[in-house]
Amino acid sequence: MATTFEVKNLDFYYGDFQALEDINVEIEGSTITAFIGPSGCGKSTFLRCLNRMNDLIPETRVEGLITLDGRDIYTNETDLVDLRRRVGMIFQQPNPFPMSIYDNVAYGPRLHGSPSKSELDGIVETTLKQAALWKEVKDKLNSLALSLSGGQQQRLCIARVLAVNPEVVLMDEPASAIDPTSTQKIEDLMAELKERFSIIIVTHNMQQAARVSDHTAFFMADDTGKANLIEFGNTDQIFTNPKDERTESYITGRFG
Image 1 (tube, helix red, strand yellow):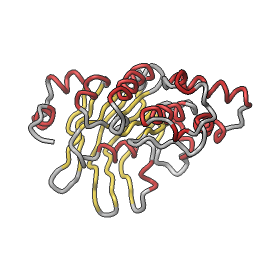
Image 2 (cartoon, rainbow, N blue to C red; image 1 turned 135 degrees about the horizontal axis):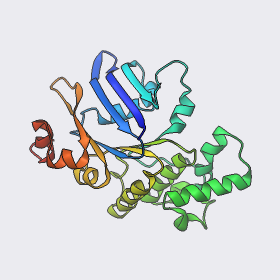
Image 3 (cartoon, rainbow, N blue to C red; image 1 turned 180 degrees about the vertical axis):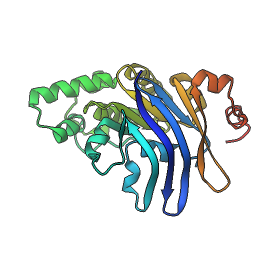
């Protein structure tokens, strides 16, 4: 199986503060990888390194190497619009655009090309079906996206990402702001989507990580706030036979 991301000796800084230290990991394609660890341990910071969202924050810098399918994503030649199409992102809070349901999904395809109306109709229907939302919204595609429930809005945001044919979908606590029923729908959705995409999810919910992921990465920060990747492996191994005592302490609830 091809490696989607390979990360070598990654350090990340907010100004003078080093937030990540010496991260080394390979993340395979067509899998779900969960990032777990206490609050403030660098999970979301590392996630945003993978599509260069941290570039939007002033005075940040990256040292080390991150490659996507063998290509360094931090070269000056990298097309950031294309990178963020290939590596889409779902945020903690649903963030639909203040426009119709249809236009939310069509926004990306229009940005990246000039599809015809019939092509757009097909993309909208297909991706809303992929996001398990089509049956709920097919008769109100022209309604404002903000009129949807929180769980529906989050699935709409997933459809919006899928509409531009990503290779990887990053999810930063995608179910923390929605109800349990919607959470279950998104977990079921992840299991279906991993056949076509790599999914990387940050979650504080240990049960969720154990349920949905193939691989798990445990992060932890030291007393100065500098975060390290403590352990990475198959999810079953991480949760039943962790190699590092700090991983075991976190998973068994002794801290965090």
